[in-house]
Length: 374
Image 1 (cartoon, one colour):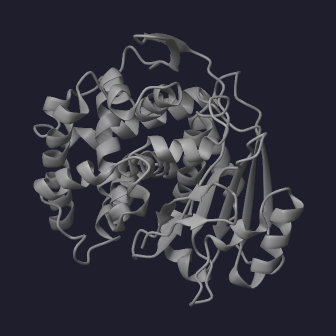
Image 2 (cartoon, one colour):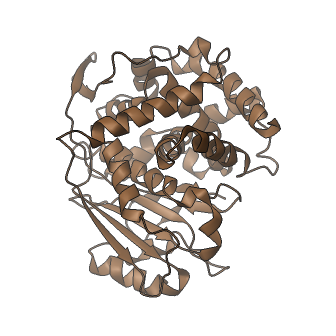
């Protein structure tokens, strides 16, 4: 189910992302962005001083990691509420980033969802306190318009081969999605979205997917100004469970408009994606091994990459309930400024990753069991 795409000599790896909430179809993703820091706190390193976006909510209630297993029903509600808080505060501020969104639709493509731009904007608003690209280009097309997409990407200054990322080579269908930061300056965001009418029944395609993809762009954007190839550096710094987990957590929590709908799509995304062996073992020991094998820069090629949409997502949801729904992106800001994943995690969550992962594995295993049996 994972697809990794290396386009010609782009030096950009597009990682698998997105997907259907009722089937095992794969929706691919990659992203691009640049970041504006507004409110920052200073983190003292042994050799350098790093500025990272701070948690703006001193009055919010969060759980400790030790409370995850004893209060599992509170986790999704706390994560949902905090996502809504951040979105509302950022949308209503006078400092909203005026990021240009360029939508391109294939000439024969029939869209089943017409609010594409508004949900891309919603994702941008949510991550307003972090780096954003100057522009975000989004291309929507069916398989019949694949040649159009190749030409349109080329004429927009990008590699036309990117258009093939969301498309199957055997079934003649484009129903994936890829988004990332373009490797050449000024590092615009570029998203390619395959459209197929069979997906029109999938709630995930009506907003959550768009926010998921934009989030990948914001992740990579943290390296703009810090690396020659921000997308590659982001891929090399992040465990794969975190890469897909942060995108899915944002997409699902702000892509639907009620908590009840959130619980519905949360369950369908976790239980409906990969229930065939060997990806149907969600024991705590298997999840712990998945964390251990999710090695930055290497895990993108692992066959269990797809577990980022379930295990990774539920892990980030728990992290959101512990320290805010933007806490994982704050961790990326630290990584973009030179910290490795383990140090960044401990800085944000005040527990080492080595001590945290057995607790997360027990919690996530229990949640998945409950979701399958409820």
